[in-house]
Every structure is written in C-alpha cells, then in structure tokens.
Length: 452
Image (cartoon, rainbow, N blue to C red; front, side):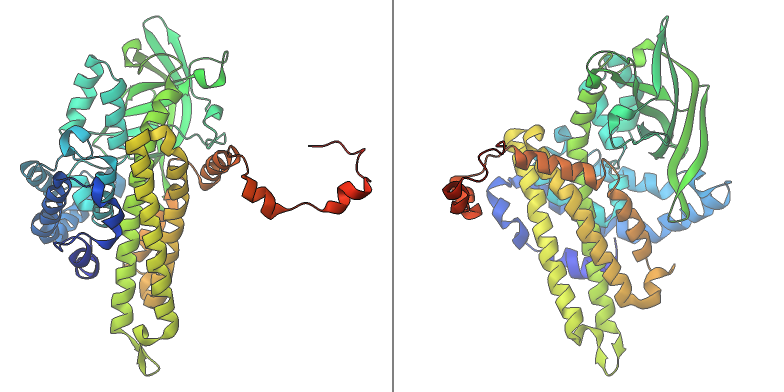
C-alpha cells in the first residue's frame, strides 16, 4: 500500500472513471455493483487506511516490545478503528457473496487492490486463512458451530487457522496426512504433529480447522475428516514459530497430544474432509493469485520510481535500454496473468469451481512466478537498498515466495494442468502436423513390434 502504487498504479487503474484496459474483455460481466464496490474500496484506502497506516505500524511496534516474541503481539487499536470504518462503508466481510453481491469475475479485480494494501484487507476481515475457514463454517457447519465460531469470526472478534500440513510426511499429497482423529465415547481424541500453520500464534487465534484421519479402511479419500479444535484445548502445544528465510513469522509448529473435543465439533461427518477441502481451496487459490498480482504491481511501480530518480554513468536508469526492456516484459507478463485470473473466475461463474480447477492451477503457478521475477528485478534496480530494512521489497519477496507452497505447491498444480490436457484427444490437424514416416509401412520391418 505504497505511495508509489497510488501514483503509478491506483491513479491510473482504479481512480479513473474509465474501465482499466485489462478489464475490457470482462466488461459484459461487470454490473453496476462492481463499479460501486470499487469506488467504495478505493475511497476507504485513500481516506481511512493510508492516513492512518503509519500510526498502525507505530502502535504495532510498541505492542511487540511488550511480548516475548513479535508474533505474540495483539493487533493494534488502529486496526479496530479501521475495522469500524470498513463496517460503516459496508466493506466488512466483503469476501462473502452475500455481502459484496459480486460474481467471481467482479470480485477478482478487487482482490488485486487488497493485495497491494494488506492493512485494508485485514480491516475488511478478508484475510486468509479466516476467509476460507468462515466459508467452510458457513457451508458445512451446524448451527451450534456457527454460533460458537462463525459469528465471532464474522464480527472480527477472533481469528482462526487451518491445520493440515505435517512435518513427517509429504503433505502436498494430502492422503499422507497422519494426524489421528479417534472417536472415544462422546468425544474425539486428536493426536498429531502439524507445521507451517499460518496465523496460529497470534493471540486473536481461537480455533483450528484441522484435517486428520478418522479411518484406515475404505476408499482413500473417504478416510479423512475435518474437526474444530479450540486453540486453548488441553494437549495443544505451540512448539515454535517457523522462519521464512531466517525470519520467524506467524507460521506455527504445533503438537496435538491426546486433545479431546466433543463429537459435535466434527464438520459435516466422518470421511468428508476432502470434500470440504475442495470446496474451500478453489476460491482461496484464485484470491491468492490476484493479491499476488497486486503485490507485483507495487514492485513494478517501485522499480519505475527508483529508475526515474537515480542516475548512473551520465543517464537516469529509466533511460537505459535494458531497464526499459524489462519494464516492457513485466507489463506484458502482468497483463497475461490478469487475463488468466479473469478466465479462471469466468469459468467458475459459468461452470463451477470443478470446471475452473485447471485454470486456477495454471494461475496458481504463473502468478507467483511472474511476481517473484518482478520483485527480484526491482530489488536489483534498487541496489543494496532493495534488500534492506528501508525498503519493503525483501518482505514482498519472502511473502510471495511462500505462495508457491501455500494451497498446493507448483508441482501438484502442474500435474493438474497436465492431466486435464491429456484428457483431450489429439485433433486430426495435430496428427497431421506430427506426421508419419511412410517407409515404416512400405518396408514392413516393424510388424512384429506391439502397437501402443
């Protein structure tokens, strides 16, 4: 949420009365509610968030001094002030279709703005992993679960975490998950070891949505379930914060040792964990990608700003051909990424998330790849300053780099795309282009070779 982005990006793309060129192919999908929502969101950022951003971080820094580790610091008072303003503007819980009343195609471009301004995203209660967890509770939770956990989450009073990844198995294949959920009387006994559980350390986190194994028999994907585990339940131990590039963040390693929770905490029913997970992950992955594009946009804006204000060997950096070539390449790559995001959103709107899965996988791989290239080159243009504490670029790089793992690593998504592609039979034209050596049949020396 930088001044550079406001000048270079938001002024051009968001504050103009004209539709940004990147959205023209989607114009027929945009309703008056989209334009109204975009105006409200930009006004919120300009009038409420940016003027108070410095105070937000000053308060946060003071709170971090009072705890043993920065991840244990509560949200600053300014967060709740901004939260109140977001509610007044009708932007709170804006990720919910019932609140925003937008299609996927309309919501996706707005996520880019929130990626560029995380303070706004947080104030609007649109932060992962809470958004996905709230969607799970809304769609699959019973009335008691909604009353206990969904209502305070929707009110912004508490936060949550999604406990899936484990350190002792390859968690990219979720059928490897080993955490046990065993029914004992009117309770479930949870035993397992989780890691990289985002948002679990912060004091506002009060509940985990945990994926574990309720059976070792039957169809593989029917052996897993999801259950709600209170963070303060006896047997839950936060072992340590995990470090990203050597800096500890709010990604926790957690031990669940003989944790007892009521049977009523189970979501949907035994063996329904994968069903819930698929319903949760589709929208979240697309939103991750659009926020990542927003971060890439700020990095490109920062690169332009730096290149326009630094002179070397008699020329401004912006006058150098190699800098201009990179700027041109990055603009093309960002534009292509946006269109792929919009395509995934359009397919989700028209055909559902299952049909959109290969397109979501495509952009889940491509968006962070492109963003990382842009951020890395922006750091290069900034020189050593781009690596230091006076620039946010290194933080952006670390954040985007983890997206290549979050909600499935690149390799898994590439497999999804490849399997989808392989289902498509080669066309007559494709076979013609491939061609056949006519001498194989003419001389008949391969008749004994089995055909594929």
